[in-house]
Image 1 (cartoon, rainbow, N blue to C red):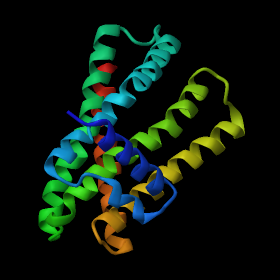
Image 2: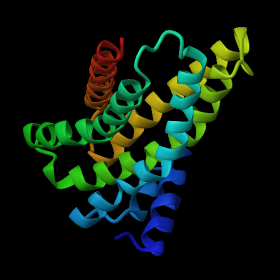
Image 3: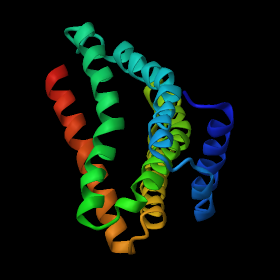
Length: 190
């Protein structure tokens, strides 16, 4: 179980990383226990994510034949999106001789996903509900995407002690895994 102190320090670290301050990494519990505790970020984000997918269902329920299947697949995808990338990174870190930095990276990545979600989910909900349309929608979605990619690159670069090019490879892997999971989910839902 995560302690309030560990959660508070992790949030402080994530907020510092979110401002592109590499010193934020020092706030994380970079142990095996801290790594598993960092998945509390997924639990914190989950209600907001499921509100988002419920709104998507509400707007598209005539196109979604089986709501139970839709919500089950979305739930499975949510778990996979949180677990698949860190699992892949265990092997990547072994291959590139960065095992010693994996725990810091994994913990920082998970807690920082909480910060990215706090920015991205309200924007996505505003788009789904029609509050954001046109050029404002395109602009804000672009900003959120670029910010999340930039933050992912920054975290990989500084917590794994990688070159900029190698950090770009880590981000590309994350994007590819996310794309494959979402593509698989779309096939199952349709």
